[in-house]
Length: 316
Ligand code: SF4
Image 1: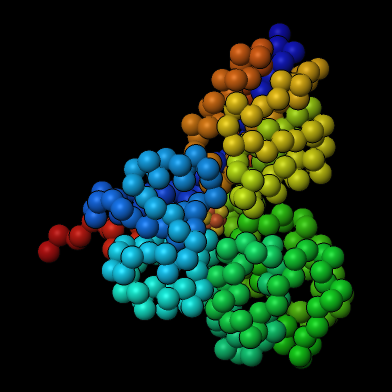
Image 2 (image 1 turned 90 degrees about the vertical axis):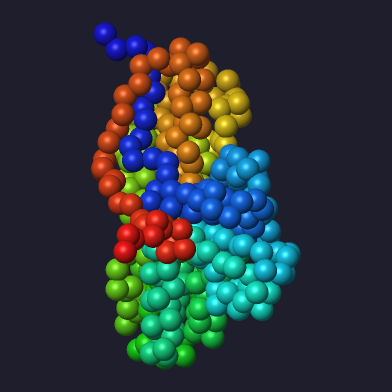
């Protein structure tokens, strides 16, 4: 007999290959060069990760001009514009770039289509670091489109030369709706050469969609500034979860959320270490949700190599 109170655990969840690489980049930089290591912006959008690295001697800054001349600076997983690279070079900073290779891919697309003089419609969230970095590759060609409602005000120079690109961590469904509206307006709109919304974002949304219809509550572990984590809450609600909440830590769970609940779904954003999910599962067990089942929709095996500066030297 199954317990009346159960937990469904979405799989995949948590760390993606780009986050894993970025966090390891900072840890290896600390090991190799010692503290302090400076990091521009949060290395990944997760409070626990940032606080843990701070304790080890990492100093997070907003801009390169806050870093002492000649110091070591790591660029975050979200990517930076050429202007930021130039600012770091001016201060003679030693830099290591932890930009996720899948973000770099979108930068390359932006550069390529700007070279061919396209109008680039970049679907993404205004003010997000990734969007600032990508747009900064070709500011004169890129226009930000922040969701379906923003389509109305988009104008282009030549309707025959328009392409859309996107932030890597958006809701797949909402992005497709934005593209549909853009295409209604610009029928010759071209698609990106390959998916810009990354595999990890897509996989985590697919897993939540599979799990949510069975859930009274879906708890998403992730920080408030994590785009892909916030999207998981939206996807859970759209897919039929009774309620969904974003939390950084188990201690933020309000016991009232669980009142009368039979099934609680749990997932986590791509920047979230598994230890935080374990904390939530343990909390739920103490509340009587002891039956834990995993809902698996994909197996992820992708791994990215560390930035060149930190790879072990090949033997001669
Ligand atoms: S969420 Fe996607 S784009 Fe962002 S770091 Fe992870 S793999 Fe890279």
